[in-house]
Image 1: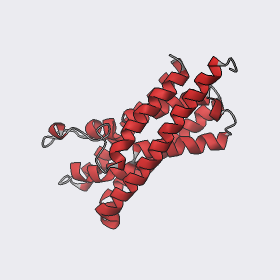
Image 2: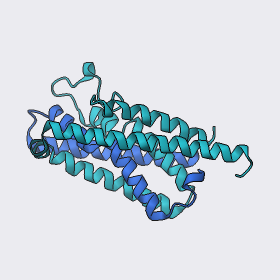
Image 3: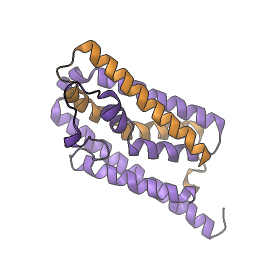
Length: 144
Length: 70
């Protein structure tokens, strides 16, 4: 396996994750299975909230790719750790404000935001695939 | 990673932030959190949320650390 293979496979996985977002269904990668939904009183913090909702295959794949792209540069690795912390801090705030946010935005706007995020995710996925292909092409031509 | 060679520190940080924010999708998770915690009192809701975010952060950091051995 090479990092290029990882970039391409990660891109494909992210693209698959983006399709249900685009078509307005919850991602199977993100959403809990209906049959596995919480029985009364069961702890929901770890499953399904932490895994797979907040830290699903999409997040893990992205983190693996981005860490590889930091290529051992300590500044980038440190910055990336700060970015991860920031994203989860924001997520905490958004979820804590969940009820009022939902009330203010309304279901329709949430759908729109999900679709826009889906388009961005699809484009990011293709960018990963292109980077992987470019890296592979460079290996073929001996430019690397 | 030919396309990413010229990328600066700030661009890397921004790209990392946008990528992670989009895949974590807090705005998409929020309605599910509201649905899952319906009928739980506010204090307990906070405790569940803090634990969930802490675990998710831990898992993500773990994979970022593990990627170094890849």
